[in-house]
Length: 158
Image 1 (spheres, rainbow, N blue to C red):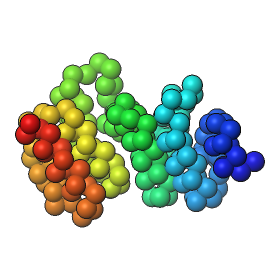
Image 2 (image 1 turned 45 degrees about the vertical axis):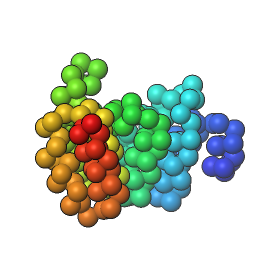
Image 3 (image 1 turned 90 degrees about the vertical axis):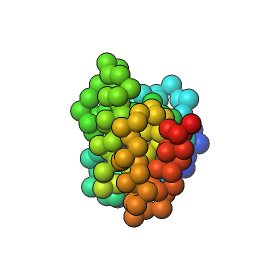
Image 4 (image 1 turned 180 degrees about the horizontal axis):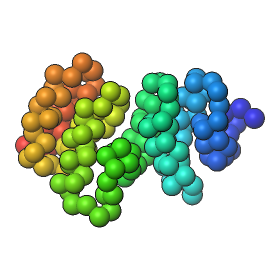
């Protein structure tokens, strides 16, 4: 069955299987991208878990980027899961400053989409400690990261 048919049928478990098991990076990238289209699916926890795993472990940069993009599509809580996993912290037990520290760490990732998400997250928590790293992100080589950092700084200033 094609990924298109799986998406149309809402068969996220099979899409997750493709993401985890395909030898073809283009197919894994497409599967990761499709999973972001199911924000209200009953298997949302499985979707987020699979995307976090792909973002952290896939060897292909395009797959990693698609996974991070899909996590962003799913919402702040999905990105929080990725950042928490990468930082090795449990956000359920942490205060906002713990989250902000993890987001600051993610701001130095090699993956531009993750830096974008981290910049957005730092703006969300509004910690003053985020000002310096966000100001530094205004010099990022990726214009999308710079734009997110500028928006985040605007939120903190409010």
